Length: 304
Image 1 (cartoon, rainbow, N blue to C red):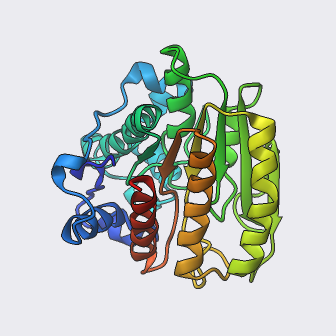
Image 2 (image 1 turned 120 degrees about the horizontal axis):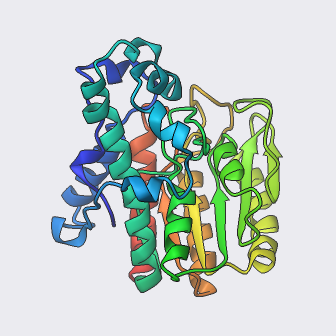
């Protein structure tokens, strides 16, 4: 398990105006601790991504753009923050994103040792090499893949994106990378538009239920694992597939979301493939409770 109090975004209260509850990371961690699922001694506290690691995926122009609060505000889709001082944007936004993105790299390193790594953050799948998008600044999963390859730790990698929005940024970041396979199940007709073309994209309609979603996942995932032959799997476990999410209209239950995530983790463990869970999106008031149940179930499975 990987988490840091530094994941929290602080902008003098302005962060509460955004539909994404950045406090969900802390809520999940505190609930896991309260219920005895983990203790502080069980948790890896990551360092922030370094500039060199960021540049393995992102362009020089992108790195320079982060010095302009108005540009960062566009990446966050939070125009109210565009007039903030540069120092506040650095401390309150960019450092937390670097910490949570560094958490994905640490979770991946630990998954290679122990089988499963869970980052209580990350999954910033809209970030592209030259810009951020959709509340995503750094492309944490593509960066982790590039860094691990540079360290000779992995070869082939698979990204299983279960967020209701297509991981367009991940697809763009890995275009031309024959060793990385992207598989996405996402709702049609919503952000991002137009969609990028990943290796395997499954569009689902509004109103998709637990049973309908799981039928697609059970049908597709074994073949994806066979074709991609990964040495590591990254999951973007967005819970915005939950019924009532304000930014989508899929009809999954909390139990269905948790079962979905556990199914993918279990499929990887049965094949002895290291697997990394990142949290991705989720915008309903119950998002953190749903992901708490998902993480709790995976911890139970991984420790059997």
